[in-house]
Image 1 (tube, rainbow, N blue to C red):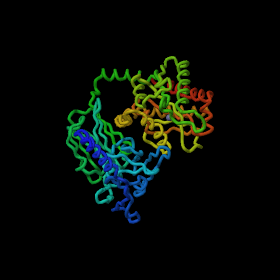
Image 2 (spheres, rainbow, N blue to C red; image 1 turned 90 degrees about the horizontal axis):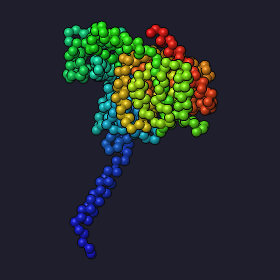
Image 3 (cartoon, rainbow, N blue to C red; image 1 turned 60 degrees about the horizontal axis):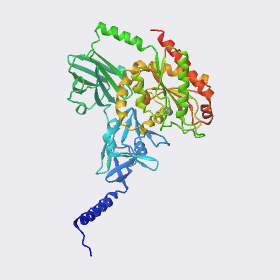
Image 4 (cartoon, protein in one colour; image 1 turned 180 degrees about the vertical axis):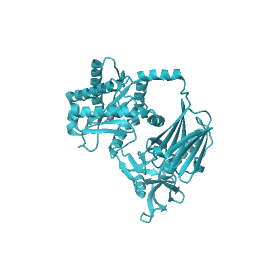
Amino acid sequence: MKRLNLRSVILIVFLINTLLIGFLTVQGADQRVRITLDGFPSSAPRTIQALSKDGILYISAEEFAGLFSYTTFSNDKNKKMIVRAGIRNIKLSPLNPFVMVDDRTYQMALETRLDGDMISIPLAVFLDAVGDQLPDQLVFDQKRRSLSKRHNPNNISAIAIEEKANGTLIRLSTTKDFTEGDVAHFIRREYLYVTLLNGKLDSTQLASEFQTGLIRKIVPFQLENAAQISFMLDRKVHDEKVFVQPGEVLISLRTENEFDADAIQARLDVNKKRWLIDRIIIDPGHGGRDPGAPSPYSKLVEKEVNLDIAQRLKKLIKANLKDVEVLMTRETDKFVPVKDRTKFANAHDGKLFISIHCNANPSKSLRGVSTYILGTRRTEEALAVAEAENSVIELEESSEAYKEMEDAAHILNAIAQSSYLKESEALAQIVNDSISKKANVPNKGVFQAGLYVLMGAAMPRILVETAFISNKYEETLLRRRDFRQKVAEAVFESVKAFKEKSEKGI
Ligand SMILES: [Zn+2]
């Protein structure tokens, strides 16, 4: 018999080990277990079913929502789900560690699962990531398999400070909708005092001593009928502004010197030029490997229609508005990441941003034209559209970059948006009415949604969903050249009217 040499022995030992390790790590089949519930109303069940895998407990998102009577909204097509917990919209995606709460993204240490048609959440890490955002305070003991609910008396859940070029943004996350009248603020010596009427906070949790932006220290204090938060400032602040939006109170502190006459004049001149609508960015939605919504009836795909309408619109503007330059985010059938589209618009100092799309819905009877602007006043249908249009980022290499964008967009939304919201809404209204009339499609109206493609563009910006590619009749319209031309003409006429109106004052 041939003797084994040392190298063969090592190889055999290595192979056995690999097999063993492989065998041991395959393990981890799901185990059904029950989690006991504590602190829920007596009408609620005493336990809830969970799946245990490698010691991690997962429960169905639907059942979780049911425990609190939170309403849910799910998209059959992509299996995403929105849970409406109090004033928050929590968006879950299958096999994904990212959870969106309103417009912000949180990362869990583990991914969600997809069991059959349902998303399951890894309960412990889910609560670690977004537990603060829920109206109820939940304590989950994974070892003892118990979930206790306590009423969360606090409605100010977090304070975040963000540094900006000319100041600092303070962001208070709230689980109650405050109004502007509830918020009082003033600066005295080196402190900014913010008081929220009927605000409730946990001062031990929110207190902090760190240096970010202008803020050196945060001192929260619970008063009888209000919460007061004092921010120690390290520089002189020239003005402070408060913005209130659902689930959030924002305070912007500016350090720029406002009283320099030359600077004011220079800014006025720039502003004058700013409002001239002399450069329009047209954004044909989707392209390349992202076809957009496909037709259920023919080979037609959304990206083709969008590009064709955009090109027609460009031609009309160029031929009729001599002082306007038109730029397109894509001229051909190519893939352009969503964030590059707004980057392009800003880099070229666009004055209007018009994104052209077609709508699609599992409910094939839906028809009509709708126009979207960036905002938080949401409806179920607007959420569905945002979800569909935003899903393109999954085709991009670095979808995580959108977290940063959402943060940036949030600030923009709160501050810059206050000047563009009105314009965007006005433009959206004219465009939508005009398409409906000229191209003879039902007018669904103007909606607000958190659309990535509109985030970050510092100019009035709209997204037009011209007609439904999922509706049999409108799909035939979208295939027709005369219909596309009518849509392009309607948008052109609206742009012209909007331009005339907004330049009148300059
Ligand atoms: Zn689209």
